[in-house]
Image (cartoon, rainbow, N blue to C red; front, side):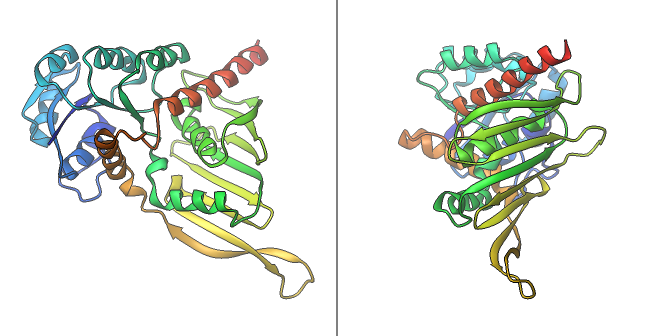
Length: 319
């Protein structure tokens, strides 16, 4: 039985699961609870009352207000980092010093690129997965396989629309584009359209032998919105509802006019609510086999490097 511990007792750690026994958990605690070979042995939070209540709700035997105490006394096999981004680097480095075998880190992995690079430099010998959760979405994995196999022909142009900021939602979409199309060969800022701690921006990524993907930030709305639309030489695909649905289009001769058009195949659900369950299963499997997680620390750092490049351009434009 693998021993898991959680740092930071907030929403993604466990609060989003309204029922602790959910069969399709949306949180770290829920996903660990659902895995037959994992037990949650401890949690920690800087707010002792929150750590204590989290432990009570999830039936965790130990809670701490200091990570150092947890690492000294519990020897976890897996440590989830669910606290705010600015606190993750120190916790990650502490886990590396304590030789925790595996770390499951939320995104963005840090608040600054400097800290993310520092984490990468300390990670030798530690298995690290980063929760760009769409990589564990069964429907999106199937879609990616179809894209790679050429079902839609060659991807040509795409557009992504996202709310919140570059690190909040934009980084998810940067990672999705890298996962589908490889490393971008060109990063261009189109317009800085929001300010604050996590500003948004319109930008474009161009991929070698692949598409140009335009990212449009949607300011001024309170809800979360993300969608993707990619046009290819032999069809089109659309990812809707933050990844909950996929629409596929094939090409066919128009019934009236003498030319080819795109024809919808329908909308398919993606089992998006299995992402965390699949992520934990992947991490457990990697611990046992020595394989590489489906989303690595390097993926988290690369998303930050691209975001940082955009922010550097943005700073020069704003000045």
